[in-house]
Structure formats: C-alpha cells, structure tokens
Length: 370
Ligand SMILES: Nc1ncnc2c1ncn2[C@@H]1O[C@H](COP(=O)(O)OP(=O)(O)OP(=O)(O)O)[C@@H](O)[C@H]1O
Image (cartoon, rainbow, N blue to C red):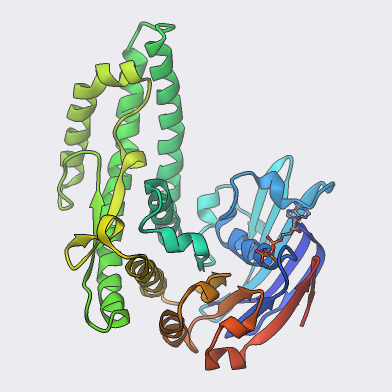
C-alpha cells in the first residue's frame, strides 16, 4: 500500500501544499519546528481521522483559519483510492472515494499506517494508558467494528462514572440506573476483552521471531495481557460476561465509595517479558528499546497478514534515536517492501544504504521543496 499524493490546506503551519511521494523511502528533512512532524501527522490523520499527538482537533487547523483539509491519494490492491479529512469548528468530515462516511468506523481501515516515534520507545516502560492506546489503534485499523465497541464502551463508562460520583455524594439514591449501565458496559467490555486477547496472540506470534532475530538469538520476548478480572484467554463470551457480572456485583459498594469504575478494559495492561523476566522492572533501557522495536516490526507484518498488503511506515524522528545495529535491522526489514517516511533534522545520523535511494523533501517554515 502506498500514499502517492498528499494535499494540505490550512493544516498546522501549512497554508497550501501538494506533494507526490516516492513509493519506497521519503525523507523529510529540516530544522526544528519547521513542519516535519506536521507532515507525518497529516498522513496519520488521513489514516485514523485523528492525530497521534493531540485529542484537540482545533490545534490541527492553521491559526486564524476556519477549517483544515487533508487530501490523499493512496493505492491499495492496485486501486487508487482518494481520501479526504476536513476539520472545522462544526466537526469532522471523512470522505472515502469522494463519499462522506457517516460512521468513522466505515472510514478507518481503508488506509493502514504504522507510526514509530520516540514516544513509542517507551511503550514497554511507559504508562499502561500508552499500551492500551497502542492496542486500540492497531486493533481499530484491522477490525473497524472494534472502534464502534470502544466508542460505546467509553461513552457508557463516562455516564457510569458520572453516576457513581453522584451516588458517592448522595445526590442520587436509586441504584437502578447503575445496574442498567453496568449491564450495558459489560456487553461492550466482553467484546473488547475477547478481541484484545486474540490480537495479543497474533502480536506474540509475529513479535517472537523478530525479537529473537534482533537479539541474535539471545532473547525470548513474551507478551501477556493482564485484565482487571481473573479470566482465561480461552474463555467464551458467556463466561467472560459472568465473570464481569459477578465482579461488578462484588465491587458495587466500593465503586460508589470511590466514585469510579474500578474494573474493565480501560484499566487492563500488557506486560513484556524477556527470558521470563518483566522488562519494565528488570530490563535495561536497551532491552526495553529492542522490545519496542520488535513490537513495531511485528505490527507491520501483522497488518500485512491481516490486510494483505504492507502498511505505510512513518518513522518520525526516531531513526537517530536507535543505535546502528537497531537502525540497520529496521531498515533491512522494510527495505523494498514498505513505503516509508523518515523525518529528521540531519541525515548524517542515519547510516544506511537504503537512504541513498530515498527521495528528499526539504521543509522550511511550512514550505516543502523536493
Ligand atoms: N495550528 C497551527 N497553526 C500554525 N502553525 C502551527 C500550528 N500548530 C503548530 N504550528 C507550528 O508548526 C511548527 C512545528 O512543526 P512540527 O511539529 O512539524 O516541527 P518539526 O519540524 O517536526 O520540529 P522538531 O524537529 O522540533 O520536531 C511550529 O513552528 C508551530 O508553531
């Protein structure tokens, strides 16, 4: 899969841009704060309809402008597909093949992208929220209906937390609504948990050989999903539902006392083990980085396996963060098969023959030159 062309109108510090891309390696080079990440972000927004940097979409619109537009032409299974995202104070529009999609879950998944930025290097040692976000984004692009269930779960969770706060402050006495919201929450929690278990199995399958190879056969990487309820990954829907129902019943008074929902996929986590030791606690910074790189490389293979084509890879300011050996492993793995975007202030920090074949784009103050 490739992105052939990108057009930006009033996006961040770009007033108007129209660029065509090379189907192999594209290097976006420029000083700090010139707009390199903004280009990467625009490609990401075209795929996911949201930014990887901010939940506040207003920030994406050029200052003092009414709207921002990102248009892209991608090729997938030998077909050209036009995509369009328009952001304004009125909301967001997503168009696929020039047709506006009412549900974002009908849009997301058409264009597959893997982003690798410095913050992903802390996937292993960072917060559980970072890891949950990672699972949600990846699952969302291979299974668009996951986004629907996640959205419903988050909506009900918000209502339930609000009600728990009211019950805590005794502004509400009747608990009937709490039971209704609990049942609704469980319906979506079961689906999220089931799909995350399956996704983790897939991820583990692709991560193990990659990690074994990067570590020259010295390390074995394992990934475990840690839910907030005791449940086996082979449990069926009904069993998971019963486990949640019983646990919510048991925790009812405690949740009212605390004024928040204490269990569910929004509190789950994943743990990485290298040679049976928890990498977050015991791993060196190098081992944590290698684990993060393995996950990213596995993600590319996993998407290719699920979708039938390699996703586009965005390496935002990350190559120079990797040492020569990890850089080489990454670039050798993707060479010739994955359309890649690299943003950097200086190509000198990147030593690889792959870059000799790259198309260079110079970015300066919201202008791009090839
Ligand atoms: N909504 C906006 N409207 C206009 N300009 C914006 C907007 N949002 C961000 N900018 C500008 O975009 C620039 C930052 O661009 P970007 O994050 O792409 O930098 P970069 O080239 O990747 O830099 P670095 O190498 O430091 O990461 C800044 O000059 C910032 O002021």
